[in-house]
Image 1 (cartoon, rainbow, N blue to C red):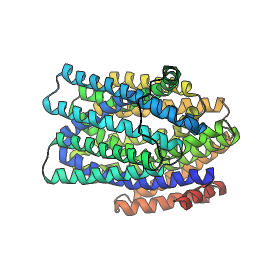
Image 2: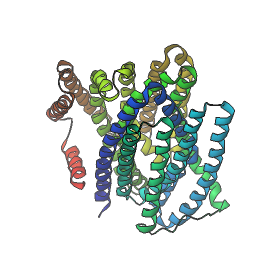
Image 3: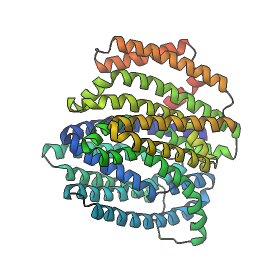
Image 4: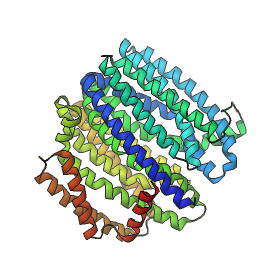
Length: 480
């Protein structure tokens, strides 16, 4: 199998599994949110947000660096495998102590404390699972990640339904998160030893390797820190400033848009090794990939943004019920932050794969400062609605900066072509939006299917999709 076939196979298999997985994730989220209610779901969301923020320090760029370096030189696999595993053990130990201290010092109620402790176990298992994912990614064998994603979603759905049926409380659901994460880690350990024939990870302390590796990884790590903070700090600050109900309303909408991020996440997983390799072998092809990736992301993102903006009321009631009706304006705002995230995905991968991670660190730092500053100013007065606007502004700032820098670096050579394509995509999306607005009382599933068909027809008529785009889509479809 050549590199192109492998790339499209990875996208095809991972996309299929992620669609399946996210459908199941949406299902168990619906049951979970409805069962827990606004306040309890707010506590769970707070715990997940806090673990996501702290969890970035359990990686701090090591996974990304390991993937990039191994894909360029497979002989480094064992060196990275054992040393980075050892570093992560130390990081997890420090983080666990830190989480315990947070719980003790802030004197959380018993229920919240137990939630945080079990989510800490979830964090530990997930950290080492992601470690193995990075190894598989460097070998461009993403089908194992695809299976793990599907397995995780199935187990969570079954577990949530069982716990709801027996009337268990909030803490038990956090035990479920930890239990499922443990099973996924066992699966990755099995694949690592039986399929890849890796020996079990060993403690390897090579200070001459650790020092430069940690220094370089920290450049990626800071990116992760800044991004994670501006993604999850809203929930944490809302919890302290406005209480659990505001967190629950905000996260009901946020969970929907986070599910949509599987699209760039899937492509990122497959394209990062390819872009890392092209950086040292074929920079012209790298530029073409960046432009195509950007075009496909806005081609998908803009119509989704318009559709969800119009249908947000029906979506919130269908998924979470009328108790979360106040989440509607939050969803209408956050969906456009997600559209901007779609747009910047290509350039984030570009900077990481071409050793420009310091530039990306500066950009994400600016985004984090913008987000936190606006949160302090606006959340006390406008609650979770302010948090939504702040997220939107942050993503717009980051997209603007990455576009400017990519253009200055010469990676956007078809600027006029991209502008024309963007206008065609916008026109097609607006026409589709008019149709949705006129017939928004139709059955939601039928309306979405018909609207998508109308959008694609108009896009073809306007030549928003060219022959090269069709060829790429066929390659992805045929690879599944």
